[in-house]
Image (cartoon, rainbow, N blue to C red; front, side, top):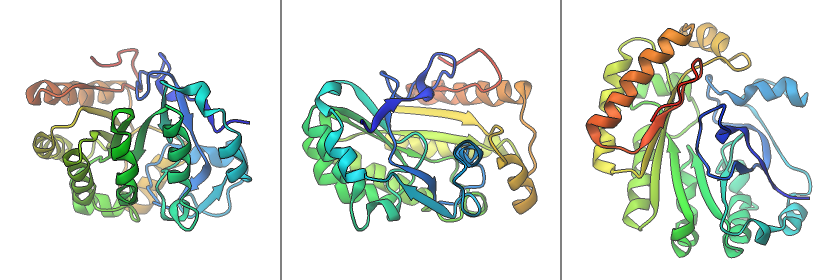
Length: 271
């Protein structure tokens, strides 16, 4: 058995080139951030294990300690693995008391595996000592859709405030780690252009290695929950996707960032 599996996130049809080798390590089902827009909530039906509302449950993989020991880490030496594609790897329930993300990173990094870590959590700071020792094989990315505090409070009720996420990335960069930002999802409601401009202006001070973005799109019941629970009612489609994508790519060019916009409703996958 192996914790490392193929991921759909970087396949050519998706355009989401978060990893070069289409590999991911996932060790839980569910999440406790409570993000109403989350795309992964569709696994409720796929897995049939949901116990309550999405964002209020979390299942750790059974026998995780054994799985970490049995994963053939050296087979993936030099390859890049996304941590994680279907849950935040640094949820408090995953870090304490077993420190699962650290134990997985220790096993993989020690065997020469490269990791691209994607999180919204501040707990990754607890492992800076480990990441710094292997900085040439680590790329730390934070999901930061907006700096709008009120919008974040409504849509990511239990995730850390966006400015604190920026602070963690700034600290990581000072320690010599490569950092990046995933601006997702961009909610095309209200003055979304102004929100994007403010975010990119702050990103300029961070100087991230890469910036990726995508618009809100339908997965599971996310659009219905946003409309019903916080009155953010959006019906995304190809034209709106193209409009948001073009504006995002314009900001990438203006700020000189490497990155891409991931189109959901078009074959066009950014630059």
